[in-house]
Every structure is written in structure tokens, then in C-alpha cells.
Length: 142
Image (cartoon, rainbow, N blue to C red; front, top):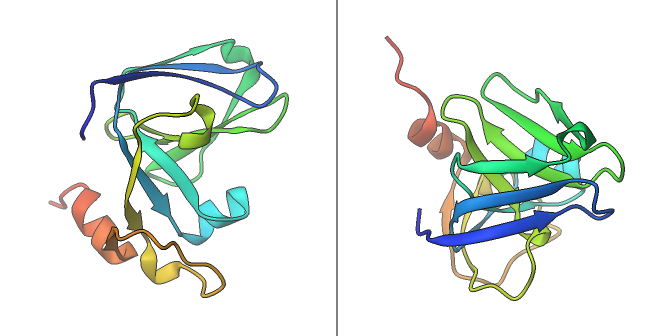
């Protein structure tokens, strides 16, 4: 993770606020069906590691979306706040929550094999299929 960026994010209504100590400059896009169902399109996030804090936590609802991850949203306005990997407490936060402009670079896409044909990004990025993502991030089996 290319980091050293600190950041503050806020939901649409201002009820949920996020503070990040080390935020990546690299934006990733996820095309999996779950992310597209959650937001109506690809999820564009930055890796914020595990040093993330929230203000007004009572305004945040967490949904256990799979065995390995959960998703958080503002329970006042519905803004998507994070995708968190349970194993290492790693947060991926939608880039739109942070004040612009930043020096973000859109450089990778995952679940590229699930991307529907009706949209396409022009950026040259590293692309991983779902199988490649699971092979890279899945815990080793015994």
C-alpha cells in the first residue's frame, strides 16, 4: 500500500465521519456482483489499512456480507462507508467520501471477470479475476 496520506471522510448527511491515519493513493475498482448490487455500479475504494476511527458510531450500521468481510453504512442517509476484511481488520473506503482533490490514481480493478459489458473504464490498470483475488488474499488452508 502506497500510503502516508491521512484523510477525513464524511457521509452525505454528515452524521458519520471517518478518520484515516494511512490511506493509499491508489484507487481500486471492484466489479463483483455483490459490490454492484450494493451500490448500483462498481465500487471505487482506497485501501485505508486498519488504523481507521469513526465519529458518531451510533450512526453506523454494519452488515455481515460474507464469511470474510463486512460492509458499513450510515443508518441516517445510507452512504456506503466501508468494506472491511475481518481477518486483518483492513478497511477499503469509497474514494468519494474524501475531500477532493487528492493525488489519487486509479490503478487496479478486481473481479474483472464479473464486469458487465455495459461500462468500461479508459484507464490502464492492473486487472485481477475473482479467482486471482481469492488466491492472493485467501488464508492458507491446512
